[in-house]
Image (cartoon, rainbow, N blue to C red; front, side):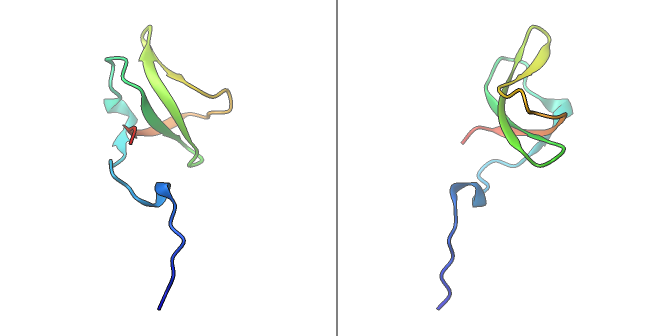
Length: 65
């Protein structure tokens, strides 16, 4: 019998969406940058605000699980 060590991020509950459709209502979402790193982000004052100084250009977003 195989035993798998799965972590929460192995289960995709919400699919990634293109960054062009980023929600502009102030909702906090997850963004994935071009290196595959994931950060929290939201829309504020006409732009995407990412909760990490190390974040690179975001390419996808999804609802926070």
